[in-house]
Length: 446
Image (cartoon, rainbow, N blue to C red; front, side, top):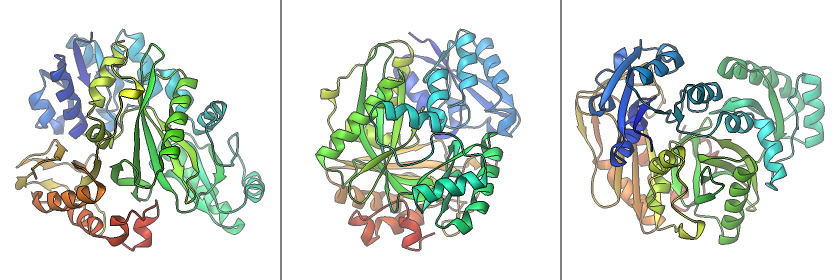
């Protein structure tokens, strides 16, 4: 069993990991930048180590400092959370070579599924449907124009090492392709240190539906159902829910089977997510795999009753899965709203001191957050400060519960996106389930 974990992250996910470790009887080490010394996970951990100044490149992305923290505290494992080093194959490899348990998949899994082209090739072998597109990186504008003409417009250009919407451009005509191609390559280089891009058919008004999977080191793979993550702004998820309200049982079964087959094909071990695009005719297509725990994992926990972080830790420790596929039952409906320290009209950052804080409560309400009254929201990191999650018997009840919880949530001193989420919960189309990835642009809320 793992005895002591270095939590190589900050904010709500660091606190989430800490809680899971404590319930498993595992000691924790919080690493933090110098400006994060008052962070809640730092206060609650068994030990803490400062790993550098505020910039992430000098602290939360500083591999040497994190590994040194593990050494001086006699830790035997590292949990990277999400973001930062969570999908860095080099870091996972170094941890393993140093005799540390990396709580996540192998470096080989990360490299194979982190590159979008190799991921597409891999899942195709498993019989997973993909959109028409290139099998290799596209290196020139002329080649891009030729390929786009064969596929048919609209097409989408994507970074092979991409994520979060960076290095991604939708193209509707040959005239706009050269500029889009150059911009995508430039963003890919700046964001991931790799300018390579590929092209695939653009799916109009799709839903973004993902399957949560768990796989152990003994060849057992299961899925925990799906999440609908269609409410997005510039490819960044804002609201997630489970299950997806439009899936038929047949499509749900097929999507789950495809996700499990994809994980088996690469010999995957850990928790992860297979992401799909779902079109208006209920056809689904592989988009990418996230080889880490997701921000939105709580909605799946709420409808299955399974603690995904605990299971991830137990898998890393070499234990077999504690559940079989037939044990997984989806109960009710869950919704998550990401609460960001941002102006709800302009979506610009709003760091500062929180001088009044009250969380909502009641049956079926959960708040994952590391902020508190008199906490200072820092400008150096991601603006998400909380996740508000609700669970109810039906989607209609969950929406009403979320609306009520948002009204109760008090965060003073800074601006937050709570008013934005309240608008969504009261939007007729959202209530009726008429959503897709272009929903916010269509209803003019962004």
